[in-house]
Image 1 (cartoon, helix red, strand yellow):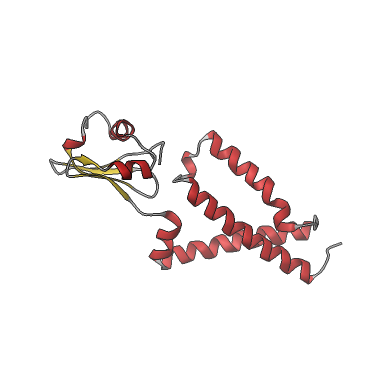
Image 2 (cartoon, helix red, strand yellow):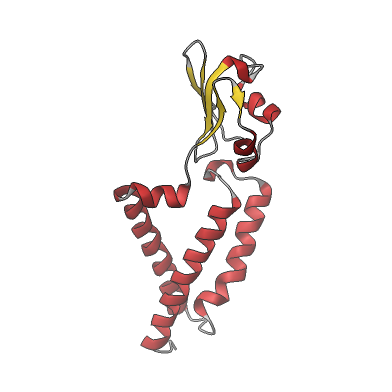
Length: 166
């Protein structure tokens, strides 16, 4: 039998707290697109799910308690998606900003470090057409971890996949 309204509200509160905490941890952890997670990313997600389960439902192991936690998470995720759509600042807070790694043909070392790339990694993602930063007007790593760059000839490109360090 299911416990009480107090327990239900506690599950909602705990689930919200866990959602926010995990969202912040994943935001700090780096830029990822769901279709491009690594094996270690999957392991971390599974372990996080297991680690936070009891934090959400406490001692309530009932079906209703689990459903309350699931509905809370889905509703919160929907609300966050709507907030991201309506408030660009909120989206930037969650997703981050693009980081310029090349400006006027010169690498920006602290920017490369901030996205976890080396010059060789970045050049490797840009393909065989680009062999040196001097060929670039600019290059940025977008919040999804892809590199967008413009050659000095004026052609703009976007790497098809996220870079491994970002």
